[in-house]
Image (cartoon, rainbow, N blue to C red):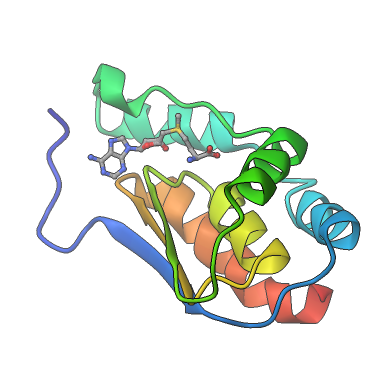
Length: 128
Ligand SMILES: C[S@@+](CC[C@H](N)C(=O)[O-])C[C@H]1O[C@@H](n2cnc3c(N)ncnc32)[C@H](O)[C@@H]1O
């Protein structure tokens, strides 16, 4: 198991900001993540903690298919989107940008990934 202090798990959260149409939303999120390498950051985080914990194996959602799946789910305005194991926050930012969720929440154990998610979240208002 990965050891972490209480409160060390990063929580990325934002309330409704108003959705953008799907195609522009996809372009916006892709641009925000253009220079971010979650695989490298995850590798770094796991190496620092000398862990080979399989639950920390990294992978990233493909934004276009993810968008299509969420569209199929037809989320309501009152619903909350959670990503347990949110990495750099890609799915969370995509859900927040393209849909009218009441709230989106990402939870990530590796600070190297969570810090990037927070940075991207801070940039989002300027990208819309
Ligand atoms: C397969 S990645 C998915 C990343 C993200 N959801 C995406 O699709 O881009 C799984 C993530 O879960 C994180 N993780 C694994 N166990 C966790 C836990 N118990 N609490 C929080 N995050 C966890 C890992 O560090 C990793 O970043």
